[in-house]
Image (cartoon, rainbow, N blue to C red; front, top):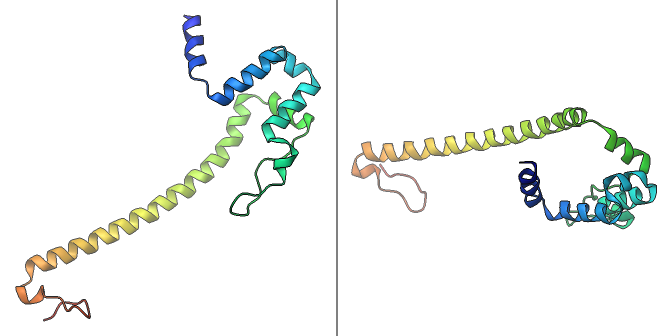
Length: 144
């Protein structure tokens, strides 16, 4: 059973995860990488894209979000337990989620308003006589 679960997780790995696993295997496994400051610096460099990418800007002129991280900060980040990381990320997620929810609510209101307007026009056309369905081509209004 354990072997099957291992195979499933191995098949589900992203290409980036496979690269990191190969890097760890080449350098003595996860423990070997964690014990070596030089390898940890390489991991930080690979993760942040090096110092060259730190000062780059994207096509909209915004600064790249990748920043250099010291070895101590990286080790502190690795030492955090899952629960504390989830709590920190939940706050940011909730803020983004509320912003997207508000945006979707605005779109929903707009769609509802446009739907109501179209339905009113259709119903007005159904209940009106033929003279009220004639539209003035210049003014785009019904002639009565």
